[in-house]
Length: 211
Length: 211
View (cartoon, rainbow over the protein chains, first blue to last red):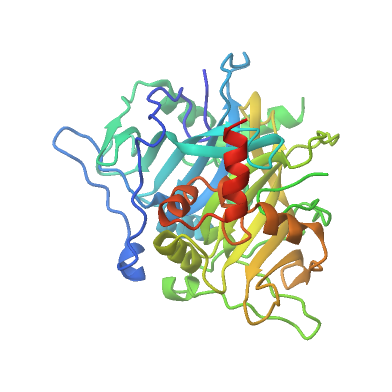
């Protein structure tokens, strides 16, 4: 089972390369309009309209073939996972060490290629988006405050049911407020300084360092 | 020799973890001030004052242990390289397929860790910045329009001499205007559509695909 730095479930709904084609910011739109805050909007069926400009949001980290399962993956395909967050939430985190309401994180999966152009070894990101997941904090909308969505298209993200293992895994292991800040190198020091690390993470971390 | 998605020279000036401590955006500063464009400023010795808020710029890509040398690296340490560009330049690229004057790209190196917290395999980014390089287009300042700098501290980046191999490598192999757009998955389709791919890259690419 492939696992990501954002969610703890397999990337099941791989998008065909190029199927999810993000609109570049139109050159005629003012910077102010482009930077307008994203407002979560839901359909009557409970789907979320996903943000399309997340590549201009604040970048948090990238992992390669991360897995929380001791058994190594048998997949031949290597994948990068890039994590982004809306700028408003990032700035609040810098000031407080935790996430405000309406925090929206996106995890984007892209294929890792090794040989191509002049590159001979290691890995670089290649091709279109292969998977896209959202972790959103919307306190008045979700009983557990946070929810995960799987992005199916530019206009539709489907709720991952609260019984899915990603919810319990994040609740049990996340460093800050159900998010895996332990894998976000610019944010972990902020949480340490602000004293916002979860009790469960601190306990796990202490157990790990005394092994 | 370790090589990166931005520059084609070894990361020589590894910063001690944490030595380069970026200032988080102060919570009291207005969004407008935070998003103010970066203006390249040079000292009388020719050093560049590096941007400190590049982690809020637009993310382009991440590579892991990339190398343009057919001989694999013998280093035991795995490193991620993250590339960022100033938002103004990114928006011009989206509209035109090439870079405007005053484009500033940063390549940030961070250690790749495998086991940590609940992660069991693959790699995640861990710890402080291990290296930081700048590729800047400042047409009136540099005879070759572009220059590379090695960041030594928050207030100083040192010019890499134009005779260094990174300049000739980028001139010969870069997909667009001396930059390795072939490794930036959101920008390569834009350059293809706008017809801004360099002749040398197109020739290399054609040779590669007909092998």
